[in-house]
Amino acid sequence: MREALFTDETEETESGPVRFNILVCIDGSEESERGLKYAVKIGQGNDADITLLHVRPVDKGMKYGVDLARQNMLDWGIELPGMRALKAARDQLFELGFLDGDWSEEETRKRVYGDPIGDVMKTYTDKNDTHIALKSMVAPTIASGILDECELNHYDLTIIAMHGKGGKNVRGEIKWGTTRTVVTEHHGTVLLARDIEENHGHLICVNDEKSIEAARQDAILASRCQCPVYLLSVAETEDDLDAAKDAIAKARTAIEAAGVEVVDTWTDIGNARDIIIERGKDFSVIVMADSSVKGFRRFFQSSVAYYVLQHAFNSVMIIR
View: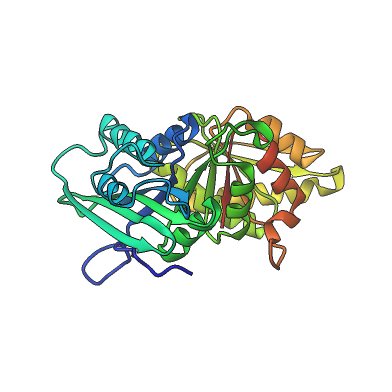
């Protein structure tokens, strides 16, 4: 376990409110750019902090000259792995207006055993104490680096780019195996950003008490970016229809009690995973609760959630 170089500076204190923390994993792809744009929309206002994270493998071979590598990293040189993607993401924040105004800058570096460059972070802070952090982290694998960051710092939402239906990948982009590991082992809410578009709403799937609470949580999240909320419950047979309708009614009550409007609802009968994927195509995000099954890798014991995550045409959010 790595020590906490990058500590969470936004926990609730006696002098200030809890802040909304978003982690965006950057791989330089169009999908991660879309994920960042969505994060900015969710994080609008003065109560949200955004961290951009790029993880690279330990450079045991020291491909780069040590002194030159360190200097370039401190200068945020684009020649080093991941720096081009992070700088492009930072420029995107300027273009989106999220880094407008006066911001102070601070750089932090930590040596990591076996790597000549180590971890580097640049933090921007404004007068409202909003933090934008760009982090280049060294780890044995991309997944372990993301999980370390999530464990060391509390994030309300982690966004990872996902490329293509069924986990197709382009060289250099975050792969399905990484995504699967993070979703399996992370204890927080994860958004798998795939072909994500704004303003198409969240389709929240409900079927039990845990999913109803997840629906309430996501509705509050969706309201941050003015995303309309819709509900779907799927009954396997006619005999299950009443239970599905009851789940919809309870979820609607919980969401409206939180001050969020439910635009429309559906109760369908049939194969849940196919229906969710087909209806979900018209929305920005399909939202599902983590499985209630206990034990290690509990999420992947839920065949419906796993299938939807891997095969959906669009983004999928797992609420925990």
